Length: 363
Image (cartoon, rainbow, N blue to C red):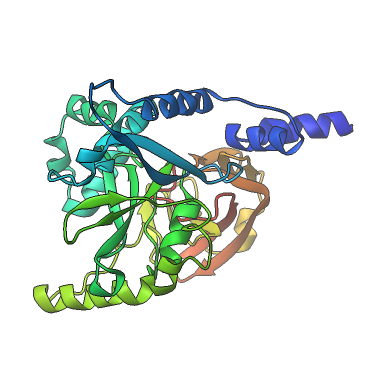
């Protein structure tokens, strides 16, 4: 019986949960992604052979999305005469091979959803071909997010997060630790980052120059730059608001702040811990069920929960089947009935495994 229960639990695990389960028990697991990481580390640490060039290491820190993996200090060989780089941030170029090696197929449906959210319709999204978007993904485009803005108080030094420009559209896992760094730097709510990211540092005066960002020294909770980050970012935002006359805030995800997102046959809301789905119950003729007593006949209600999906039957007929965007804990899922002026609703609550907001409810 215990073996059957163990097999059932294993069947409900996501691939990431299964790998973490094995690693926790001392079993060495190497995934294709691990092998690609090793290959790209070799690439990044092997400079091109140029006669007469004098190289030095530029240090930065990798923050894996997999929380079972530690932060890692990485270095890239750069010629000393390129450290004072007139063309911009070296990291935007040096990290391209990494994101190119970890490239995945872009989810065009998710791209359409995000375009609709930002532009009000998907027509503008249609102007970007799938071929063009895949080309961007295959080239390994690097995006930077300014974690600390350069100010006179920090000697014109900025700290950046470097990420895959289309990480979300590749459905890369959310990186919780990257968001935690943002929270400590004063971002509330923090932005969302997908896949592995990197932390690096730049000076912008007297010349633009990438400088070292070191493990332990710069990633410690009491790191000097973190102690002053919130105030420096507030100073920067105040200055920008005065210049632009704007006070922008980060847009919320669908279903957040108690604002229900309407889908075909149901609505949903979410917070970081759980997702709630509300289904108005209907009779066969399409009229609303007005009493909970009416739900008990003809087979009643049956709801089945799995790690990545759920299904709902009413009177022996399937009325909803969802494949979730991310995994949930089946043992933390419940349902109940609730009545309002329009009729009886089936209210389903699912506990998230990732503890973060989803950009949408289904894959």
